[in-house]
Length: 532
Image (cartoon, rainbow, N blue to C red; front, side, top):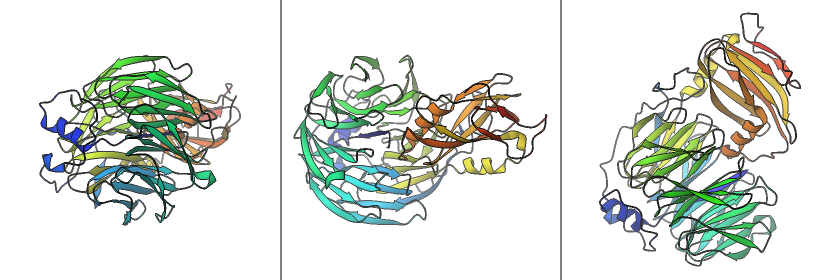
């Protein structure tokens, strides 16, 4: 994921069986090494229709803090794939989606541009998948054959690379062009140096490593490995032989980093808490969440952390500022979670109830969409505003599209409702601010048009209250969460502001100011700011 690469390991199916057949809620009692036992799973009846009315937290519809959004997402397709689609990854640059089919020893590449798909052979039991969006190479960890399969940008097989025993997680450092593989049974990490002919080296870590996160916002990169069997996180720096160990809760299952705050979040599935590690000094604190937390995702733009709790049927929202929490009810057994930072929407597939809970990050309101059988993994391409959900019971992928976003943006014809700040550059040492005001309460959309691609966010405005946008900080956060490769030291950008009512915008002093059409005293107003 560019400035940040996080990939959560797959869980053995007997772990899911215990959660499914037990009297819930119960905490997860560690990881099992048993093989697939899908016959123990209770299959929900296959759904035919998948039309949804999900909540919209999107830029161009003004709503109050308690308003339920309507008409946001529609299910556009259900794509058949291989058996037991277990992991999914998106390359936003090429708009290609890759699905690892655990029981059919292959992946499916779905072309997001035309919907075509093609199966490609892998090793045995592909369990985890990661994409380098700079080189456009794809890496698949094969749990059953102790290897990583590499594919090129067009999905063609390149090679099998031997790794340790039972690789469960894979993460890519696109800046250094390295790949890190967590080998659960051999308790080590294989480091693949893709810049040097895919040469490999091995580093010992804790017992049963299952998840990896990489912070590439610092040089050299820093790697964090969650060790499920020893209840620790191993920390090491790229190219360095030394490492540190941080104690965490019981059975850490997932890990994610916010590079803007240098905080690391570890979901501990058996102790029902999240360990928050300070990356600067490796001090830590534990935050209580629901039962059986199995994943963690961060919205860097809002500094909110989302943790699905499989045994208490909820998502815990952690405020990164003070570690305060709130619980959002979901369907049955949410194991995974994903975020679209552009829309501030959070998606939690519910494995047991066969649906997807969609959370409005602005106010934590929810809507529930019926899904297929046993929805499991989820990925978002926030450049196309499409969401992809793997359905393990029906061997397909549901594609959900937010058709409202671009339509609304294009429909705004009143020049007083839009403004542009052009030709800015985000560089170290420069703080760039935009001030925005409105006569009425409204929600606006702020689009950053960068030399690496377009990213956007929504922002609520209160009538008569000036809002200040940290342009440099927010564009870096949005790019980090987008999956686009970028250099944080040289982001060229223009900024577009779109509202449903009149907006008043003061651009940074060193921006060239413009507006979509000739303004007037009653129209949208853009002027040079005295702050910059």
